[in-house]
Amino acid sequence: MAKNGNIFYPVEDLKDEEIVLRLKKTSNAIPEKDWLPAYHFLICQHDGTEVGYCDLRIGHNYKTYIGGNIGYGIYEKYRGHHYAGKACQLLFKQARKHGLEHIIISCAPENIASGKTCEYVGGKLLEIADVPVNNEMYAEGKRKVKVYRVELEKSNLSLEILGDDNVNGLAQMLTNLLNYHRKLTSAPEQYWQTIEESVETIHYWKAEGEIYQIRKADEVIGFLYLRLGGQNVAWLEDIYIEEEYRGYGYGKEVIRLLDKMMIQREITSMFVSVIPRNIRALKLYHECGFDHLNMIELRKNYDKELDKTDIVEVLGYQFKKY
Figure 1 (cartoon, rainbow, N blue to C red):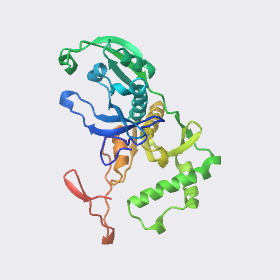
Figure 2 (tube, helix red, strand yellow):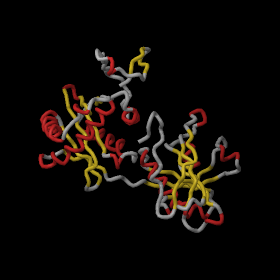
Figure 3 (cartoon, rainbow, N blue to C red):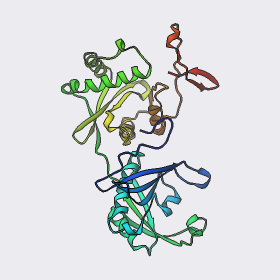
Figure 4 (spheres, rainbow, N blue to C red):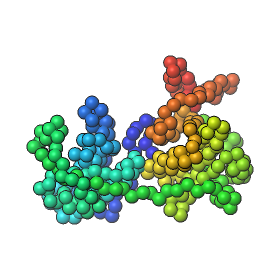
């Protein structure tokens, strides 16, 4: 998952049997120019040989429809190996982390090789579009582009209500989650959760709310705990995804699945509580639409050894951040 307020995700997994994408730089959005956030990569063989370059723009607007979400170039001596297509397929993986469901790739009509690359990666030709006069590409002499759309594969995530026979299997995940929170707040280890306590907690949660296993195909990769209240509101009490599955955008997809469920059940609002130090969770929830500050919980320490040093300003007041 992207960290510390950074909108970009890890890229270490962007490699296959032949190539690896080496991050050269990232660029933030420039709203006044309608430029979207972007990754810029070098396409390299595994021995480090640089064979080309590519970039990925995150999001969709009128400029990406003409210019595409993806750009690429392969140095002449390395052409003929489908390196551009294979780089695009790796970029699709990165795009899915951001929740994109499709990608636009464009090329000049006379660029036969690039058109074949678009077809190689599953692109469907939408049209041959005119380049607007006010587009930067027009100033470069480009007048028409072939616009391809690629539908990105779904990650096969699903939510399944927890049955009584799966409690023990979920206990370790819950222990990991609760001890992660205790670590964030520097709680002494004698207060950390045990497996036995987690089993008791799960039974209590099942009585008070709903626990869903997060499944990726046939494998359980996490869980979420949901409580429903009066006035058609819900509380997302906890969401957990196993460490090895983080950084792939699954958290966002889980919340999208939950959103659909809440709308079907005519829930009007959903609440979530976040430890201020958990920047990763704050970013995830904010990007998923939790944009109302509903309740602030304050703490006063009589044991000053528990005091923190990090300061955060909220509504004009300064607080120590846990």
